[in-house]
Image 1 (tube, rainbow, N blue to C red):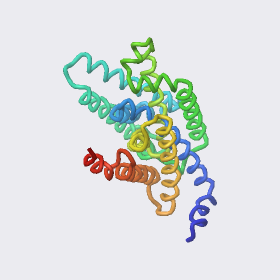
Image 2: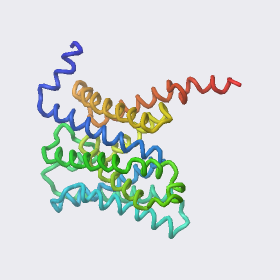
Image 3: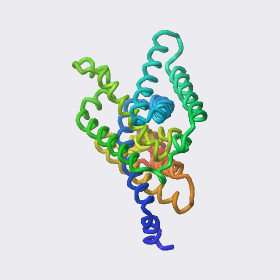
Image 4: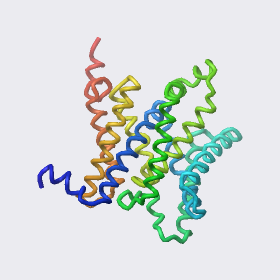
Length: 283
């Protein structure tokens, strides 16, 4: 099979065209948000929120309301629970985060096992972008627009908040507002990632592109462009690869993202493993 045919073959099917476009969009949104997550050091928080939204998504399905509403409520609720337990006990934050997100996630799994549905709710865990419905596409597009517009409007404030929240507070910024804006976007974006890679792997899309770009650039604007390029590339190519090998689409996307990170980790011109020994030897 030549290269042109390799790329053209999936495009004969409408479901593959939809899958490629939706994957690219979700890859773009998750990558943009991942830069702020990386700068803030919120990888574990991203893991917590992305897993904690699961029961909210199931409950929203049962109540026949938009999944984003349920995810938003439980995403914010998980962080409020983390803050409350951290403030009222002597347990450290990382342990509290692990406790809350595994508890919420387990509740979601129980609900999935008990809810009778004509739809396989297991797709929430692992994604099903190849079978995405038009209503889910519309929801994903709306979430993506909200996220990208909010990031664009609050770009400078969010950068300063993520880079140095103490300084942001000292110059009069409402960091509580920015904290919950970022949290809300995280909850919504987790829903967008449900259709492509599912709850379990969406954290990779929210962390890996930003981490990859962080190794390749010290400037935020360049970091953002690199993250988006790597996120969209891995999402599109992962979908293509999953078609040709008949494998999990979400798994292929995340494996490709991880490979890009490993390449950056080794070959990054300033922070890669290959240049570190040389830097240590130089006077």
